[in-house]
Amino acid sequence: MADLQHRLATHDDLPALVALMERAITELQKPFLDASQIASSRAIMGLDTQLVSDGTYFVIEQNGSLAGCGGWSRRATLYGGDASSGRDAALLDPTKDAARVRAMYTHPEFTRRGVGRLILDLCESAARAEGFTRVELMATMSGVPLYRACGYQPVENVMDERGGAPVPLTRMRKRL
Image (cartoon, rainbow, N blue to C red):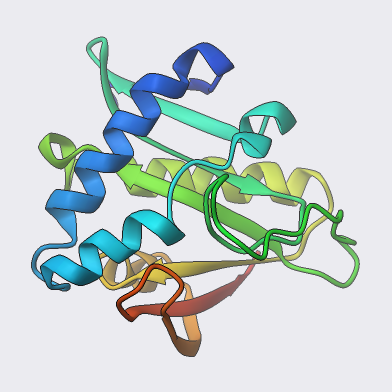
């Protein structure tokens, strides 16, 4: 992880982030989902520009190349991009709610190099600094092993059918 750099995302980053997300969904989900589920994933996942506006979304780079992205939120929406239905921008109460880890993506050429762990560390530290004592996320099947290794526990398995085909997801939590 020593050669990974991080910074907060800006709105100028959006085109590159969307391209990275598309590639990550297409490539990294192949061992877990069929073609119709991958297509469905695009409708339920993606960038939530509210995270960029809130200053809670990170860009990870290595030697000038975009290696990954992800963030956290103090808002109620657990997952989904700008086009996803059911979004809720209500602010969470750190004394009783869990912060959300959101929209984590690793470029397929940068997997298993610490990108995901770095994003989780950044998100957890920022949420803790704002008084949150718990975090939760909605994991894709490709993300579950990383989150388990980082101390997250599964609390609910769901099938999201909003994109047409059912996509398996796991809600996970961690105490900070």
